[in-house]
Image (tube, rainbow, N blue to C red; front, side):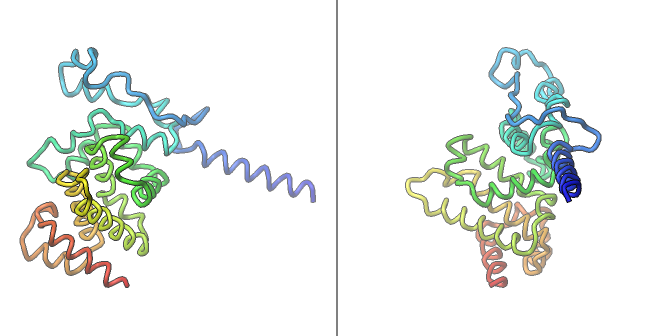
Length: 245
């Protein structure tokens, strides 16, 4: 009996150690890193001003692989929030901002790694559901709040939401919009945060293939969801929630 218990404990310890460190099967971490990566060169520093090309700037903010693959999910999320070039997804006005985000994900290895980890994306979703957006804005800034919410506009995130979570996702986003539109004094109002929330809802309804939304989208001959008026997005979102009552 003692030998059996010892065997079970050994197996459990082994499985726990594997799940803790094996973020990528071909990467070995001697020790997990619980603190976010501290970018050594950032905009505003002398070193940054000496960088002459976009390629040099992108290279300067990559995370060394021996650190990247050993960051815990929490540390990786925090690192991505702190990404120095976080506004890059907004720089191409000719592109859907989701495409701008995808380009940024492909250029920054921290975001590339984040979107490979389902466990980390589930933490992102949980933060979206539970974290006070005003506290977030105070800690990181309003523009980084919009940037963080853009993480939620990806099909990779939507694909891991079950039916109940999809409903909760739309409900929570509507709550955020209502808070912003009714706030006094104005803090996040008339800011990209509100527009990002509308965009996130529209993208979600499109990915969820909500039929009334898709019918409207096609009938209007639209190329991307950001062209849909906010009041129309809100109307579709409320109807989506009502059908789930």
